Length: 108
Image 1 (cartoon, rainbow, N blue to C red):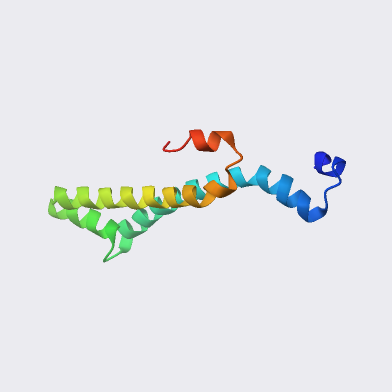
Image 2 (tube, helix red, strand yellow):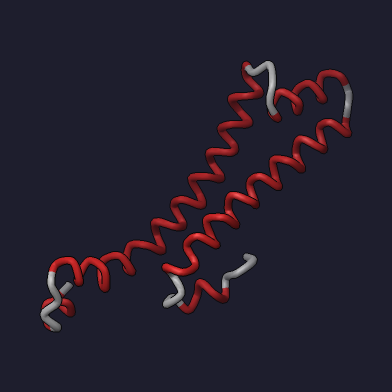
């Protein structure tokens, strides 16, 4: 913030050029972690009391001895989790292009 004052940036310019670039990487990481946890809670909720959904299919496959159904539910959850993570990464990329580490971490 002192650098912004030194360069006599206005309030909105200081937010756009200093504050947002400083906060955005942590915000994106929080979104990615939060969505991962969200998917885990969806599975847990559907395992407890749902009569439909992927968590239900997982539990149903376990109770009826259908390993293919269990594996299919796990693979679908993995695909959905990776897809949401990738969508956040793609959406955040234009805002984080200044960050060297962001481009190198691609696919990690």
